[in-house]
Amino acid sequence: MIKAMVHRIREVMIVLVVAVYVKATGAKPYWSWASVSPEDESYCLSWRLAVEANNVRGWRTVPPQCMGDIENYMVGGQYFRDLHFLVDLILSYANEIVLSDDRMDAWILDVDDTCISNLFYYKGKRYGCDPYDPAGFKAWAMRGVCPAIPSVLSLFNKLIDSGFKVFLVTGRDEETLGQATTDNLHDQGFVGYERLILRTAAYRGQSAVKYKSQIRKQLSEQGYRIWGNVGDQWSDLQGEYLGNRTFKLPNPMYFVP
Ligand SMILES: [Mg+2]
Image 1 (cartoon, protein in one colour):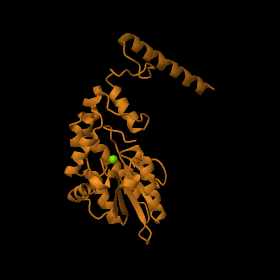
Image 2 (image 1 turned 30 degrees about the horizontal axis):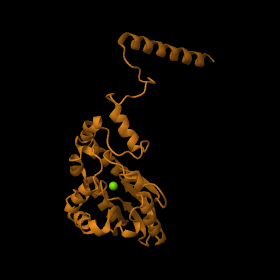
Image 3 (image 1 turned 45 degrees about the horizontal axis):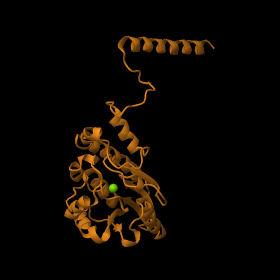
Image 4 (image 1 turned 180 degrees about the vertical axis):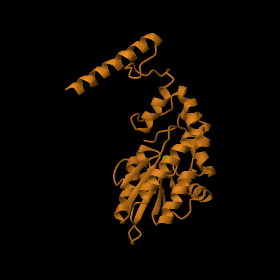
C-alpha cells in the first residue's frame, strides 16, 4: 500500500518537473499528441519507418522533401549497416537448422535490391522521388551492371556452402531480361544457385504476391522445404507457401505491389 503511494507520488513529481521544463523552455514534450507535419524535421524518419513496417502501402513516389533523407540513408552507410545486421540475424537462424540428407532444404532470395542493387539507377530517379519508369528500368536492367549487395552475396555463399538449395525468384520478365539477369548475377559472383526463376508469359500481369506464391507452391510440391525467404519488398514475403521464416530487407525507394 505504502509502496504504491510512493510510486504514485514519484510519477506525479516526474510529470510536474517535465511540465515546468516544457513551460520554461517551450519545448515540445516527447509524448506530444500533435500530429507530425510533412514539414517537420522528423517526418521523413517516421515515413521511412512506416514504409519498412508495411504501414504505408501502395505508395508511388518518395515524398519530395524526403529525398535528402533517403539519399543519406542509402549512401551514407546506414543502409549497408542495416543489411549487415540483418544478414547476421539470418545466418544465426540458418546455422541452427539441421539439414536432411535428401538435399531438399531450400532458401528463396529475391533478386532486385536483395542480391543485386539498383541504387545507381535510383540515384538518377532522385532516390524514388520520380515515378516508376518501366522503359528506363528495363534499359538499366538490360545493361546487366547491377552490383552485388556484398552482405547478401556473403549470405548466398554461406547458404550454399551449408548445403541449402538456393532459388532466386524475381518478377523480371524472362523473355526480355532473362539473359541479362543471368549474366549480371554470374558476373557479380552469384554462382551455384539451384535455379533462377523469372516471370514467364503465363504470369504476366499478376501481382508479385500472386506470382511468387505460385512459384513457392510449385517448389513446395516438388518436395523442397523452404526454410527462409528474403526480399526487399513485402510482396516477396506475403501470400502462400512463405517458408519457415521471412526476412524483410530495407528499401525506401520504391514499392512493388
Ligand atoms: Mg526486390
